[in-house]
Figure (cartoon, helix red, strand yellow):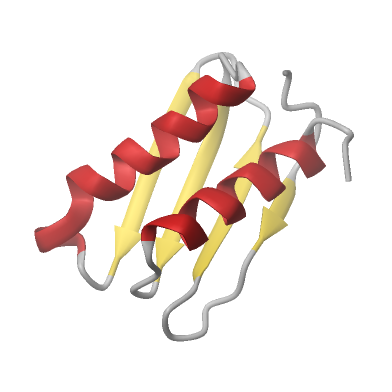
Length: 88
């Protein structure tokens, strides 16, 4: 799947995550989180699982986590990527 346009999913509310995806020549993942020191690796792993599952090879994925659990992170990333790829 190609990231064709900018898209977002989620909110900046507590226990949620705001995900923004943009077209890019390479795959870039940036993470900002209130629990970054404790869970950065797990958050990145969740993002990469969704990226791999959807076959995304390029794009900029920016994540602003406010303490979301794993399934919420995956759902928000998937939604943003699908919106950016032309799927709703």
